[in-house]
Amino acid sequence: MRVGIAHHFGWAVAVTASSGHRVVDRRRIDLIEPGMPAAPIHHEGKALDDAAAAELVARVRASAFRATSASLDDLASALPGPIVSLSLRAWPLDFPDDLAVQRRTPYEARADSVMYRQILAELAHARGWAVHFYDAKDVEARAAGLLAGRAAETLHGPRAALGPPWTKDHRMALAATIVAAEFPAAPIR
Image 1: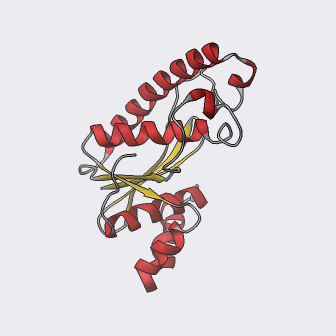
Image 2: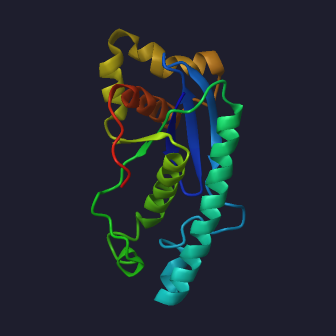
C-alpha cells in the first residue's frame, strides 16, 4: 500500500492505493490535537517575542507529533496490507531550521506547512515506510504520463466508484502514489 498526502494546516487528505493504483482508503486525518493553533508561526507567533514563540512552536510541534502519529497508526491498522511508502509535497532543501529566521519574510508564510511535512516524513521514516516527495504543480501530469491511456479512469474514476468527496487534493494524493511506485524514495530531508 502506498499513501499519498495532501496536507493543510492541522489536517490532511490521505489516499491509500494498491500496487495496481486502486484506491483502497481515503480519509481526512488530523495533524494536530483539538484546541491547538494550526499556524503558530504565521498567525499566533507574530505578536510574540522569540522565546515565547519558541515555546509555542514547541508545544504545537509536540501536539502535531502526537496527533499525526495517532492518525497514521489508525490508517495503517485499517488497511488490508502494510504501508510501504508515504508521499508528500516537497519543501525547499534550503528551508531554514532557525525559528528566528522562519519568523521573517518570506519564510514565515511557509514555516508551519513545512513543520507538518517534516513531522509526516519523520513519522513515516520511523515506521519503515519509504518517503517520497512530489511537486504539487506537476504530480498529476507526471502520473498521467505514467498511466497513459488509463489516466482518466485511474485519477478521476474513484469519484464515480466511491462517491464524493473526490477533490483535487484526492487526485493529487493518488497521483503521488503512482509516481512513487515508479521512482525510488528520496533521502529524508
